[in-house]
Image (cartoon, rainbow, N blue to C red; front, top):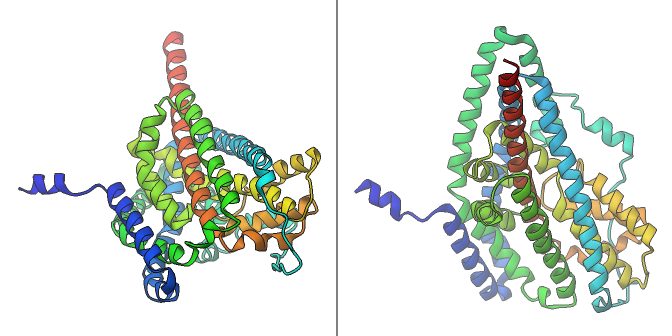
Amino acid sequence: MEKTAKKKKLPLAAQIFIALILAIVVGLLMQNHAEFANSYIKPFGTIFLNLIKFIVGPIVLFSIMAGVISMKDIRKVGAIGGTAIVYYLCTTAVAISIGLLFGNLFKSRFPVLQTSSLSYDAPEKTSFMDTIVNIFPDNFITPLSEANMLQVIVMALLIGFAIILIGDKAQRAVDGINTWNEIFMKVMEMILKLSPIGVFCLMCPVIAENGAAILGSLAMVLLAAYICYVVHAVVVYSTMVRTLGGISPGKFFKGMLPAMMFAFSSASSVGTLPLNMECCEKLGASREVTSFVLPLGATINMDGTAIYQGVCSIFIAACYGVTLTPSQMLTIVLTATLASIGTAGVPGAGMVMLAMVLESVGLPVEGIALVAGVDRIFDMGRTTLNITGDASCALVVTNLQKKREMRKLKKQQSEG
């Protein structure tokens, strides 16, 4: 009896999908009651996101430490980390180029607006050297309490390296870290069971508030951005997972469905991290790679955000009656690629990056006010693309690592 009950239970992907559809239907019905949705439905979504945020710091810290320790070799960590960073930077550069290409194709359909009434408070600029300094923690607790993922990653790497260097004497620490990693993974599993409720409560108010706005003049920009998201996923990621990851694109996207739907509704790369790890491991990515590459990707891989920069830069320029030169577009590609490193994987981070990109080519930062109203709708698509890129990297790195080890083994056998 128990077995049949288990079989009948809907998979998480189906539960999330049903929650998503229900949220859209209820959200559209509640368009005249958006205040109610924000006051009484959204708080439950916030509770769910708070639980996700609570588990993300410990998951990143312990999973990276466990991943580093399991490799038992600092050079191996360097090889995996290096491959991942090169992959992330290359796909981000391609993404921003796709964004600019489609932005230019849609340019004639973007309106030139009366922009005198626009206002947007630009975030304070951080210098390049400050950005470098801010990667390194000055305290053990603060990075975890403030969810500064780059600092958490640095902490985890330093502790992991120290344990490898100490060797056998650190065995108790190794056992402890692996145990805590398992405990936090189990906590994560418990929280993820609430995903359908969280998805419904997060999405419903967004639809109730923005349903009509999507149909306005921003429809064309949203359409351009979403076409880019689909093109990048279908062309770039499919090619990468087939040629370098050794897995069919169909199997990849099917396996990634729960994480993609969760990312779409939560608009948080870091929040989707636990579910993304689960999906990647089911697709065949090794635990040692996912525990290192995915937290890194949630922090520095921003392909969806890069596309958003490209499309929105062209749109804002068109609204101000400005035509971007090829050199300005190249500046956008470089700025967006480099700015993606260190942009936190939380809702709204793309807005900060967009301000940096606009300033790099002399466009008025006030233009962000044009897209700020529906930023959440952009964010859902770009986050989905970001986490899909992280997963494709985990599978590619796993496959390359396997091939590397096979070559090493053959070499040893031939020498022996």
